[in-house]
Image (cartoon, rainbow, N blue to C red; front, side):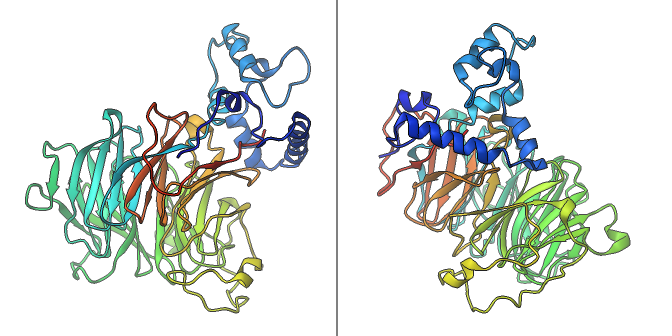
Amino acid sequence: MGYNMSRLEIDSDLCDGGKSRNEASGSRQKLKEQLNYLDDEFAQLTKLRSEPSDHLSRAAPGKRELPVSMVKMLAGRECNFSGRGRFSSADRCHILNRYLPVNGPWQVDKMGSRAYVSQFSADGSLFVAGFQGSHIRIYDVDNGWKVQKDIHARSLRWTVTDASLSPDQHYLVYASMSPIVHIVNVRSAAKESLANVTEIHEGLDFSGNNVGEDAFGIFSVKFSTDGRELVAGSNDDGIYVYDLDTKKLSLRISAHTNDVNTVCFADETGHLIYSGSDDNLCKVWDRRCFIAKGRPAGVLMGHLEGITFLDSRGDGRYFISNGKDQTIKLWDIRKMSSNASCSGRFKHYEWDYRWMEYPAQARKLKHPCDQSLSTYRGHSVLRTLIRCYFSPAYSTGQKYIYTGSNDSCVYIYDLVSGAQVARLENHVSTVRDCSWHPFYPMLVSSSWDGVIAKCEFPGNANEPVPLGRRRSRRRHPAY
């Protein structure tokens, strides 16, 4: 059964699992004291995006009460204390980010092969799921999760390693262990898209010289914000940028000394690209000066093992990375170095994340040149390239980060304090990918058990579909 929240729990300021009122009050006071020391720039920026306005949060003239009562905020809005007649974006986020998508799980779909990719579209109306069995399904979220497009992938090698919707949601690209990325018209009339039988899946050659489909494989592919370019990372240590207008490769970078598992554009300008590799490094590439310099704008060190995924905050400054050292790290590119100054010789163990457990002695190691702002632990990054993300800006002010995990769960962390605020047990196998709806408290995860499952707040009127031994374990985010 899924975790169901009572009205009393919703209205409480702290979900204390049966603690007395005095104990809960003491916990809040302790947290308040701890947060007083979080005076770095990132903490302040996050606070500004998710804290209520003073005129809506004060019970009376004088000092603000903590935690802020939402009833008093609503009363302040109705009385138009702000003079705007509405909540600010920070007011809205302060209310919405208290209600995490933890009720459930409800089964969206189940396939006979492992699920590798799951992502909402930018407006939340569509959801894309990619499976190892050559299937990519696009669901109409607003129409009862009906399958809008059932795509049978062309020339699939091993699995769908990545898929990306264009910003206008007209096209989808998918990649596998090949230099050929295929593009599909999502808006065409055919519901079933069988490659080059019912529809053409055009191949985009990232090799640039047609050297064949065995040349290299692509782990990560992403659209630019304007939908005119694709960026990809590959197992030949390279980064590729493809121009969709000219249908030609516009840039290849010999970026790392090992597989490039993940790439993304830093912001909407498309000038900066972030990359993460099995060489344990994150790198920043500035296309405006790359031709002149031929090297990255900067390098960020701190992970002890390879990087599996990157997600940008969208501001061209901050991003997070998931690593095989079982951590997520938060980065500020202003702290990057011109080159990697520390080697990995401080490691004294042999380990392969694809089939071995992470060594106990490795968990105690720290990188001597760690440049990250924060580190988050608790989840498990094994067997596959598990992904992590910032929570949505609209509803949470990007106050949280969340990730899949090899232990079949989804983890949600408070970005500033690092506290684990939720652990969702929605599956019985590795959760490789998950996606938080851009506007609603809904989180959907995909697993190697073939199940696409969603959690919501407060959830729908139906009982969750039984999914085996699952229960969402939740600790209310502290304020």
